[in-house]
Image (cartoon, rainbow, N blue to C red; front, side, top):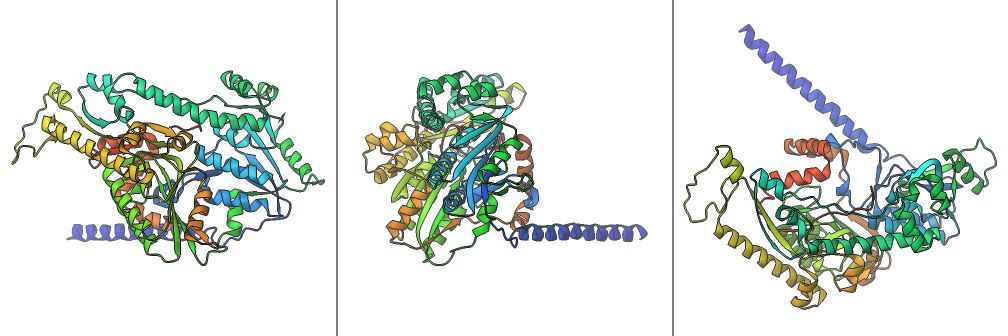
Length: 587
């Protein structure tokens, strides 16, 4: 009996401790949720708007990487691209802002996002205000942004990693053969190279052609802008990049990548001189991009709205917050359709694609939305395959010059382990009610009839894909098929071949949407809404999600996505509309 009461008491104590821990987290979440919300930010006179190391530009609230229990594990301040562009535009006419200082050695932003920031800063310079930049160990992406400045200053022991673009394709066929892993692949499109690493042990001529064209398109655009900003001849700039001169500070200065080699303290003294600050003890009034946005947040949020629906990440079935999950996005779209204050919708796509079925669900709901109000699409870094597919409901499509788009193709991958199992004494017999009850098995592979049906499914999905593209782009099946086949294009090329309507920014798309809706006075509202730390707490209490976050933090996002493809049953044997790779200018 004593033992019984002892166990009961121990359980009661454990429950009390558990509730106490939960209560502490509950209070912490309330504190984190309220932190900064009541803190008013005032822009002082003679201030400099600063883009620094703590700035991360993201396309969508769903891209924000939170740690366990909603506590961010990073110091970077995440800022929506649209907010950043609006802040720079506002600073142009703000008498308290005298200039911009770009102080980023690394920059967490995509190529098209940097393009938009550069364009906004170029427009800012028209006000007559100065733009200076300073770097130490500068990544290529950070220099791409910083080169837009009037003056670029470099640390005497620093360097600029200016090297051009490259991509590396890894092949697994020999590895799979060696260890007895079978992979059945069905695809439509000779350029649909997402599955090529499982079929070959070298790059195909078609894939090499599309990658070479794509990389050269992207690099031509970015390198020409850097060369023009630095007033360097394009041929000389190519020599500078080929020779890696930027990595040596003296060479960087000699070849005009930088204007002067100075210490950070000396740079700040230059800023003081620019602001006519004569007292050395007086501090510079620097305000970060995030704080500047906070200083006017909440202004003009009444009346009619243009909604920006962000679709960022891979496309999947389900109802999760991160990435693009069809059930969740169907709810968002229906909500926007029913909201009478929302006069137009801009769909901002930053996705390499994913599930064909989920993409089709989202496209259908967008088509219903379009019947009630204008729908304009804006492409970010990626709008390929399923990401391009969902854009086919648009009244008009804007692409960035460096967007990776197209990839009109479909594939299916079915891995199996029959040989490796057999070599290790493992086999399986099947008992079934029908001829193809188990057309696909991880141990026994794929039946011939199963391959035949999957092929028909892939071909049917491709025809459906091209059908919607022909309707939206007003072209024939043959015309789209000629530029399809899974091939990826830059935004510039996509405009030339008619896959998009205009080259332009998210802001351009918003303005056109408002114009099409006949709205002159409006404010922009973003969807989905950012999840608060308090909401994140309850989301993270899901055991599977906690485990996934731990694994992702350990092995990295890219490796996690590969692991997910192999282990997630929902993603296996599924017809996919997905881009074969991701290319980034940043290091």
